[in-house]
Image (tube, rainbow, N blue to C red):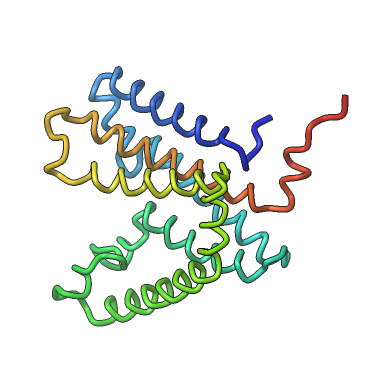
Length: 212
């Protein structure tokens, strides 16, 4: 069975991204394009995995699994991440709370206040989380810990998906870039689940090898 704190999750994520992109590219565009839309299969799968990720972190916080404070902060950060993928902001405004355009254009004041409060809380919680855990993370990275490199890969996948999403990037390959972007976001969500499990004391039970 795959251990979440090894290089296994990275290989699984890479295989998923390549397979998903290749399958979508092989399908007729009339079938593939609806699958990557907001109500399509790939996007729904990404949201489902992220909801599981958030619930996993929140369960650890509620059950006071140590360090409970870190699990609670992670729950909030991941919830914002999940809501961004869900385009949850569209219930209130056209722009996400993380986009500067929401605060520099003429949007209703109440939208800006609510979004601003969420963004300020997100910045403070993320800053505190990084301040506490940056040094241990760098130490693990220096030791070439697979878990640390999984976190680096997760960040690279999210950054890569955002770059590919730019209209001027890779226009020559047509819809394949959109297939790759959505597949990368799905892979990042799955990888984050593995990362969370690697920090969980419950993983000893979940991934325990059967007795011979």
